[in-house]
Image (cartoon, rainbow, N blue to C red; front, top):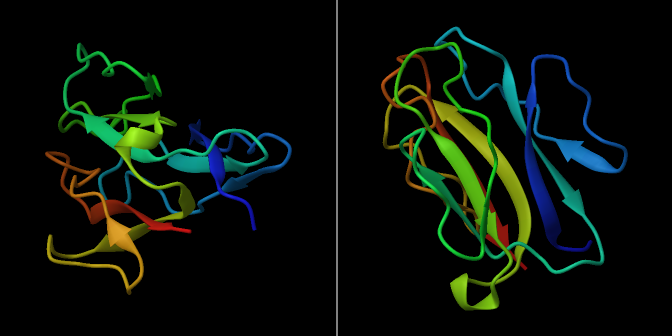
Length: 137
């Protein structure tokens, strides 16, 4: 299986682009708002090495990062949260897989060897605690 080379956010029933994988877990679960889902592509291009979350609608992505211009709390109130990713090899190892975990408290952790990005994607909106998790090759 090849590494992840691209990432986007799908809104409502928007289908994943051809060849992409939709993570079928609503990023606004329990908070109302738009139905939002991460989707990723595997390919022969340069792999994604890190994902960060920008916590303001005015935050620009750092150099080498690509911002996904969809508020992850769209329609749910709460904090503005935008994902950004990089393919810069100095920012981490290639990401082999992504998933989303949901829970009733901030302490939820994925099973090893998965690791979570430590930003609740429902921050300030109520609902479930939602985290993007990843594993390296």
